[in-house]
Image 1 (cartoon, chains in turn purple, cyan):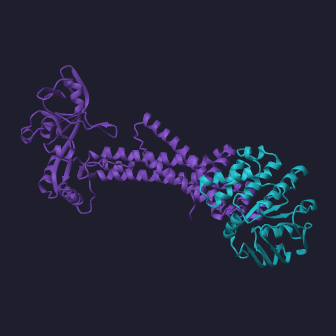
Image 2 (image 1 turned 180 degrees about the vertical axis):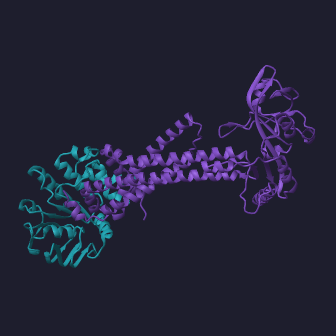
Length: 411
Length: 225
């Protein structure tokens, strides 16, 4: 079906004229489409924003890292909590066992954590996260020193009181001074600052820069030996992650002396598990999106169909005149399709403008990085054409098939 | 021969009954004739006009218009024939209310794909011919009845059709304005156009050169005026 420019122009002209003559009716008709478009674009924008947010947050965990912990990262029920809360701690010996026997592991790193007040001269910072680990922590946590250096193997071996501090600690305790080479107090003990880490930002609202990293041997000497370890294992390569996971499970069961029928009393966590939880969440959002969006668009589309049927009836005589002087079926068809696409176009355009407004507003008042980009224009054109065509087709073909004699006689 | 109707029969189904609107019509009309078709209501006059105007096709018989057989054409083919061969003038003008006089006259040109640049010139020319040089931008509701009918005549003329088919063109006009329109038809006839007039008023039919009288779906009389 082809249509010439002048025929298309005539279609647009007719559409404009009839919409101008029925302004209120047109606006009311587009309401359904408008709401549908707002729902769809805002939800898509939120999902896209969340995607960006979450993948940024999770990127610091590393895709090829496996974390052996006492508890799972996600506890979804009270029963589960009761079950896992009785687990015994993970010990230094188990860490050493894994380090010695794992073949798929690239790096194996222990982590013990506490919170202590830190001081430098008159400045004091409460509840700084103190992380006890080895020199290999750089590899699993991706925390590189921005100034100075990380501690080394000997520092761990001889339990030196040295630390590498996060950006926030450096800024708040040392102000404009260079912390490297200074002595600061952590939980009342004196530590030599070896380096300052690069800024790492936040993860789910927690600062990752409010910390001090020290050798785990020093940590146990000064703050006690009763804490559970988390064992961080970096795979030798991304392709070994699954094999590594299986191997670690077996090694841990041996290290913890579990019999054949006994359940794991530890958890092996990975970034991908969080992604899974997140993907489940967005799946729900997509279903809501598709549900509400399609209902609103259906209602809107039916509104357009209804108004187009009215329009065809009102203009029966005009259709008769046009046919009498030589308009073919497809021209009449196009004339009404152009009009219905025009109506849906108005709804979609206003809807998109409001959505952009909402997105900008949400961006201003919430931390959610709402993401709207050029694709919405294509989405808008797609919606306009699809809804206008689909719901305009029946009224338009009804108009096109009118008998000119009957139509001319219509009062 | 411009129009050749042979053995035209037209039946309608009206509920369960079949109405025989036309029962074997044979008419031949030449280039540049001025013909009036007359008859009381129910004589088949409107049916005949619809057939001649290619708005409908006959149940039986053949209709040659300007050399082509239009008896069995489909909707779109008929639309093309109407656009090219026939200029309609209706009793109630049938102009598009929201379009200017000029645009109303341009419409047939839009449907036959005349380029926009020529459309305007041709439409203006036609409006000047019917004496509406200074009313081109007006909408139908800003024009008098006589002026509206002139716009309709201009629209009928603009494609230079073979036939101008006028259905009671003065029916909605007062006598004086009606006479003006009839004068216009006279001029068009003198200019070489073929005119077919459908009317039930003797004094209107008097303007023509030949009167075809219908009764009960047949030609009752066909004589020069």
